[in-house]
Amino acid sequence: MYGFSNLISISIGNMLTDFLKTVEVKKYNTEKSKVANLNKDKLTHKIIVKTDNIPRVSSKLTKYFNNQGRIQKILEDRNLISSNFINKLINKYWQEIIFISPSSSISDRQITLLRLEGVDIYNTQNKNFMVPFGKALALGRIRSSSTKSHLYSSNKAHVKYIWTKGLNIPLINYLIKYFKRIDWNSSNKNLLLMSQLKDYGLPLFTVVNEFNQLVIAEPYDSLLGRKNLIDFLYDRLIRTTCIGVNTQPTYQGLFFINPDDAFEYSEYVYGKYLKQNKDSNLNIFSSRLDIYYKLHKCQSSQIRFIVIPDLKELGLFMFKYRYYRNIRVHQNQLCNKNFFQGQPVYTIDALKVKNKITKQVDLVNYNYLLNKTKNYNNKQTVFMNYETALRAWKGFKENMKMYDLPATPKITVYNIESLIKDHEKQGQNINPQLFFIPAQESYNFIKQYNKNEVSKSVLDKIYKRLIPVQIVAKRIIWSLTSRQPINW
Image (cartoon, rainbow, N blue to C red; front, side):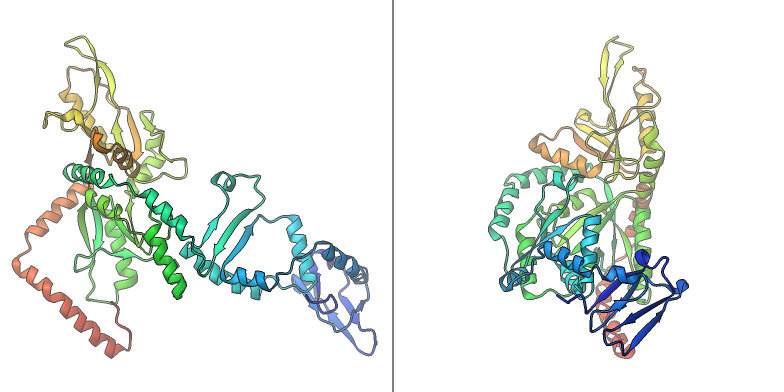
């Protein structure tokens, strides 16, 4: 620790408000003197005066520097801990404990005292700490030792984090978590639900390249730097055993509810990354909900598939539909005035109505397949658009003239991800089955997409097989002539 005679830090904001413009600093030999002219209009936040001996300062600063002995005593009473050699080795190669706490007057005063003693805690140490700390966060090597209730408690003075390093890999704990998460009957449940989603599913839209390959995104955290061998092995182990844990994915695949949102995303990707490459081309591919469900259930943490909600419908619900009296938000839905979890879906609630013919009160459930199948009671109709639900209810009311149905039905709003999870938990007793009704934009896109697919000839398919060879050759020639690396 540096002595007080080597570094003196003067806080302008607290000490030089009403001081004189000239401060004279003299050494004990009085042979030389330095005059610092301070212009009030150009005062900085900190003035650092370095001297070889303890100075005596004229004007009002003398009283401040006379308190140096008191400051030294305060620091000694703090019992500052200096890590020994063994602790430094443990912190560097095995494990380090980090406490994060909100700023307070006590901590600010402690930092000020350390600065007066010449302890540099912000410059070199901060730079050497933040870079590996950011990489460790991306790898998932930093975990909190506090419970969830403690994290959200306002009375918590600090949060304790454990940073494991080197070969400190809790392998046994991860293997236990891995086997606990394996549901040996989950494959049968998944197959049953996937068959239902395929028959009565929902069209989803993705962005693909000229080879009909899904365009995936790479998080910026992967650009923090290359992993060393230990970090690479740790990352492979965690991604293999910690299925279901919130590990950072390497890639993200996007599925869109609205084809217009998918088209806007493709335009953004092309304009930012592929505009200079004339051979690159992006298209919108129509997929199904069961395909997304199958990919989402793949036990791999390398890639995560996400459903992007219909942004237009989401905005209408947040600022308009949610205030309607006939709208009820599902009890498990996370929603407030600022956010909504997932893609909103609408289901028409059942209601008790008196039958005009039998004079009995019946429980009427809406079903889109009323006149198309006998087992319509086993189907739960799910709408992706509020206006579509109202139009469907209008047609249902005309067909059910034996009941005096209201003009506007009661509608429950939920999200599609949670709805599928709820039905998945039912296992073999999935009842009723889900039947999704997409928005009008999806119908229009699929109709146009099918026309384009039918118009393709056999020559187009043969030409597609030749495109990869042509593109590779052009990219190699472009790289040699432009002195740029090949953009694969």
